[in-house]
Image 1 (cartoon, rainbow, N blue to C red):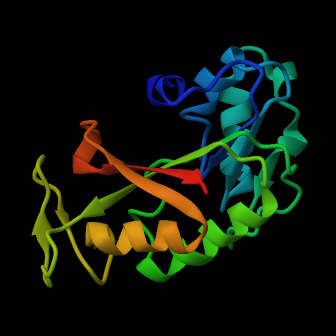
Image 2 (spheres, rainbow, N blue to C red):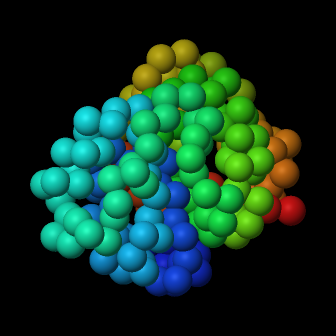
Length: 183
């Protein structure tokens, strides 16, 4: 929540939480945002519904139909007026070829998006094998948890029509925070 608020998220904005799982962020965002302004996607509808039941104090602020099962980053049923999106710890577990179509689909689905925050693990430019992150977790170019060269992530973000930036925020497990602002 702190990262989103620093990025400008206000209660009247609409937030899309990509890969929201059991509402780890949602249980904080839903009470902060105006009712009905949080949307979540995840590969598991059951996990999101479990989070809705177990994590939310005011379930009426988040209609169940705003939790959308989406394995392919197609964002079905997500409204076009989303202002902010976050994908925290999603692309650390997916191959590099999943990011470009997800970014393109998000850009197409949400033309009013002001900012996207996403995390990935990075490795030095030209590094080809396993890489030990700051906190000791070992990431890989070819299996989970995945890492990528920063220049490749920046290029994917830019190719999807966003201005990319890397923030120096210290994140869990050595993840790197990228901010994508529509051009």
